[in-house]
Amino acid sequence: MSQEFACIDIDSLKSARTGRDPYNFLTGENFIQPQAVKPLKADYPDLREPGFFTEADVGSRSHGAFAKLLDDLKSPEVSAIVSEKLDIDLVDKPKMITIRKISQAKDGRIHTDGEAKIATMLTYLNDKWDGTAAGCLRVLRNGKDFEDYVEQISPLTGTVFAFRRSDCSWHGHTPFVGERRVVQMTWLRSEEDVARKERRGALSHALKKVFHFG
Image 1 (cartoon, rainbow, N blue to C red):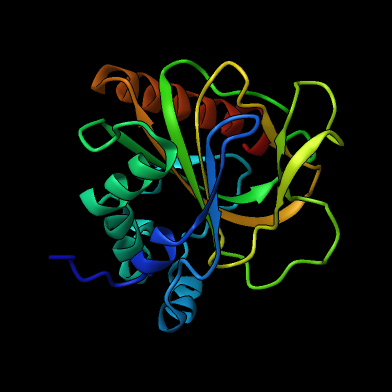
Image 2: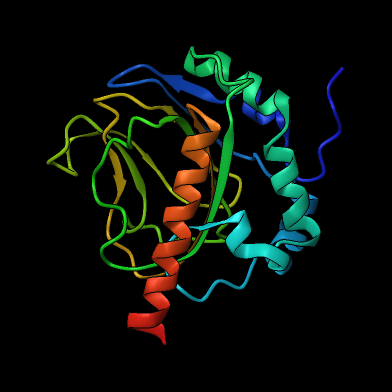
C-alpha cells in the first residue's frame, strides 16, 4: 500500500519518461502537488549565499511544508521507483539532501559527479523561468560542449530529473545568476561518504563566510 505524501505526486514520478543515451536518466513534470506549491514557496529556507546547503546546514530553517517535502523525498517508495527507472538498486543506500537557492555565474559547470555518488535526483521549485536556456540543466554527450546535448530541463516548479552516475554522466546547467531553487537528493555508496561530504560542505560554507561574506 502506498504511503500518503504531503507534497509530492508519486504517480508523476511513476510516469516519468526515461532515457538511456548517453546514460540512464528520468525526467518528469507535476511532481509537486498543486496545493503544496504556495506553502513550499513560503517555507523555502532563506538561503542568502550561493551553493548547496545540507539539511544540517539549514537546520531550523527547514520547517513546515518544506520539511514535509524532504520527508516525502526520503521515502522508500521514491527510492524504489527511481531504482526501477534507472535500473539500479537504491532502496537501502544512504541518502543525502542538499538545498540551493542562489546560483552564481561559475555554478553548473560540466561534470559527471564523483564515484561516491550512485544516483542523484533534482526537484525544482521555481514558479517561472524566462524562457531562455539560461540556468537549464542539460544531459550532455561529452565533457566539453554544452551544445551537444540530448535533453534540456527547465527548472520550473514540479520538474524532476534523476540520473545514474557513470564515467559518462556528463551534465551541467548553462550560466545563470540569481534565484534558482532546487532540492537535490543523492544516493551514496556508504554512510562514510555521506559524513565526508557533509563535513566538506560545512567547511566550504564556513570559508565562504570568512573570505567573501564576512
